[in-house]
Length: 70
Picture: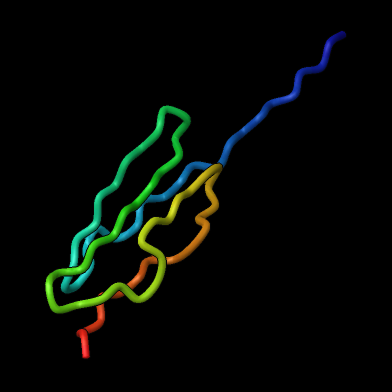
């Protein structure tokens, strides 16, 4: 009798698609991974990573924020 292993990959869960005073772009790869790129509006600076990615259900960072310049 043969046994077989089942390999279950954790899915990446999309994050909130809003970034106050900025914008974000999401790309999904064929293997189910996700990449988010963040940009702030003029007059604001990014506080955190400009790019975060998820692979096998694990994010390498958190959503940044856009803070006023000055």
